[in-house]
Amino acid sequence: MSATRQRTNAGNVTSSPDEAASTGQAAKPQRGIQALESTGALLEALAAAGRPLPLNALAREAGMSPAKAHPHLVSLQRAGLLSRDAGGNFEAGTLSLELGLMALQRLSPTGEAEPEILALAQATGLSAAMAVLGPVGPTVVRLEEAMRPQHVSLRIGTVLSLVNTAIGRTFAAFLPAAVLEGLLAQESVRMAGLGAEGRAATPPADYADRLAAIRAQLFDTALSNPVPGIDTVAVPVFDHTAEVTLVLALMGSAGSFETALDAAPAQALLAAARRLSWRFGAIGRTHGVVGVMGAAR
Image (cartoon, rainbow, N blue to C red; front, top):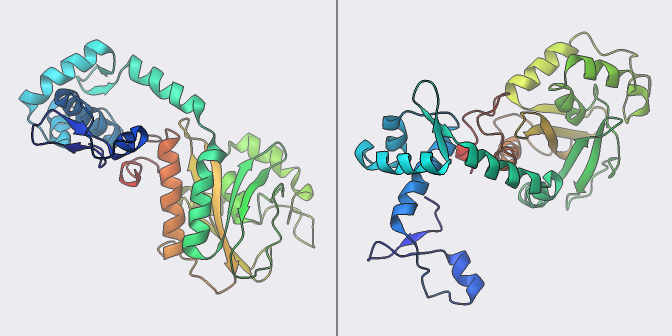
């Protein structure tokens, strides 16, 4: 159950600090129905698993016996919140899907990511950026600059190379081949694009291997290239269709921070991306998102 919920000694009254604060009665508990909270534990356990579960496994994950869980699950099926697949496993029902879609339709990916960008910049002391895939290519839509002076040539609205930047390559790694081919034909108009500043006119020979590595690690770096003296680490954020909806990045002076995948800046960036992916419905989807969303909630 949610960490904000507290049970009273009576066992059938619950309170939420957020709810109490909103009514101006912080010390007065809100009435609730304990049986429904047990039902909610089953739904949370299924959501955390990210896949259909049989009765015994679902009950175990919710911390209750199968005998206790069964009547709750029957009611959830009748309400349309759960259904069962051909193997008898419990999965999201029609009503759950409708509620989920309603929530997703209200989300603004960039708006949801704004607090994460601010928190990353404050926690790491680095510049934090967010980009979306615009009509011409990866486009910076948010930049929170570091407290320390840095020569970062990014600006809001900058369109980045799909070949020579970490943000661009992270988008490229998850694009369909035909879409990527079409976008690569426009590389010369992007920052650090092909054909600019003496760069090669075609992607390097190891480009496909680089994109495969990004898909495997959900992570890329650009070290003093294309901007000399600036290092960048970038990670993807997925939505409920398993598409990359945002790319988050941290940037700093070359050598001023660790850029390895297991270093603190990259891990903070990955954690933020996982939290956002979970909010956008990526749980249970492909591209390595399976299994990590529940831990990031």
